[in-house]
Amino acid sequence: MSNVVVDASIALKWTINEVDSSTALALLADWTNREIEVHAPSLLAYEVTNALYRRVRKGEIPFYDARRGLTEIIYKVVEFDFPEDPDFNNRAMELGQHMIRTTWHSRNAKNVNSGQPIHVCGIVQGES
Image (cartoon, rainbow, N blue to C red):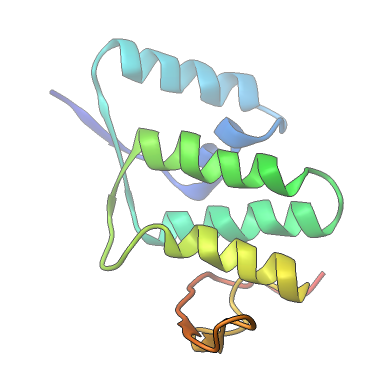
């Protein structure tokens, strides 16, 4: 079995309609048909999380579509080297959605309802 390693720019094209999304999706379909495993470093999940959430903040895509892109496309297609729970990215988007901030603002934020720590991770490339 062969392997490929992808970066965030191609993975993002699988989740939202961008220039060359059709090419990226054709590559993915070809790899799937040929049973080629898709791999990426865990950083890709953080990059895609932030890119999707920035589009949510700009009103370009609904929050649900961003979450679905992570959960049903990225996590089911890509084999990650995760040092921690991959669901942290979904929680980072949820925290950002409630606080109207980027996905990185707090790794030690407190849940407003329970006061329990919320551990999130993500990368911010700048405020929009």
